[in-house]
Length: 221
Image (tube, rainbow, N blue to C red; front, side):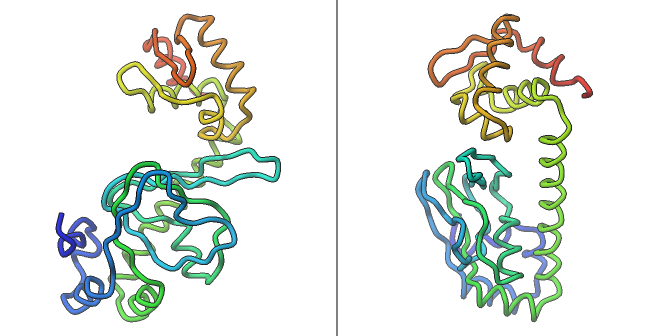
């Protein structure tokens, strides 16, 4: 992908009038970031709106007790709702964003973001459409944590993250994904292993009975 073609990856941006597209392209930068890089964190003000072109960014929050909760992931073709909210409200970040893989992104500087929000109805529509979708996703996360049974959520997460029949994750990482304590995940995985649905080794969970997990994952509760 050339630096000049990234705008076509986003439907809302490709419909901008040519003058606004030119401003966006000429005043933004395509950046490459290595996996593991912390892109933003609590107490820091956003300097750019990042539109992700390649890779995945994990947005997570850490409690006072040190427990991590994964709020959501940003994938190619998306922007970060937290960054958008902080840019609009002129507030600092309250969570952390980490490059989960090597990423490439278009970085729109804060002053360009402000100018385009003020000047272009189509750009505002693009920003707020992405924002509203992510807010809906976050409410879904809250609902899952508050109301859904942990065994069902864990089965769903294992199936979602499996590459073939293998999930590369520690108990702590799975706990962060599901917003709970490591001990809860360890107990539940032990129960899954007792049922012969999985086998565990260090940092790896192998699915041995996908049908059993799928049946539980489909349970309403």
